[in-house]
Structures are given as C-alpha cells and as structure tokens.
Length: 117
Image (cartoon, rainbow, N blue to C red; front, top):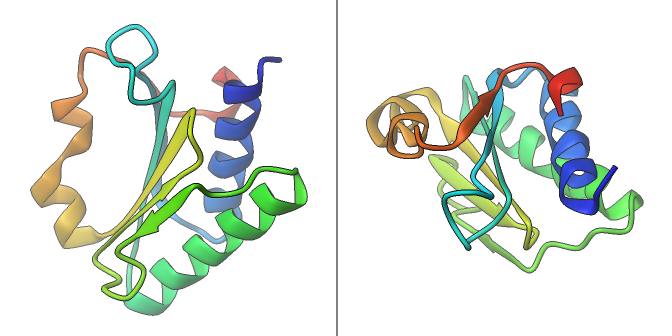
C-alpha cells in the first residue's frame, strides 16, 4: 500500500472511531497537485469536531505522520489538517453543507468505504 493511501485509511478510520458523520475520501491525485486524497467528515457539535481532530492527529502521529499545518482549530466550524499527500477536512454540519467540497472536487473519485482505499 502506498503511503498516501495508508495515511488516508488511518485518517478515515480515526474519523469513524469517533462517530464522524458521512466520512468519505476523495482521490484527487489525477486532478490536482495539492494532495492525493481529501478525507472529509463532520461532527454534530464543537466538542465532537474537536474530538475528531484530536483522534486524527493522535492516530496519524502514532503511525509516524506529522501534520504540516492545521487551520481553524479554534473555530470548530471547519478544521483543516494538512498531512501533505492527505488533507483532512472536519466540519460542523452547517459548514460542510455550505462549502460542499464533494461537489467542488467531483472530478476526483469519491470513496465512501474505508475498505475501498
């Protein structure tokens, strides 16, 4: 398994572990140089968004992957964690619907099941 796919799988599972809603990954490797995968989920509350962020950071750290940048940690509305080849987006429900990254990046391949990675 290549590194980007392994990272996406770890992030995906970390979001599922904390009951993130509508967890998905988008393989954008063929349409962008930004990253290979976006992993996206939303939480029901600020505290759940924080728990999702903390679990992703912890699981990725344990696997040897460090975040290059984290944005939005204080707001709880949209937190972006950049791991280089994988960018994790964690939203509250309202902002996920508003920004609709799945539509914007619809040229990529959407993955709804971690076993498809």
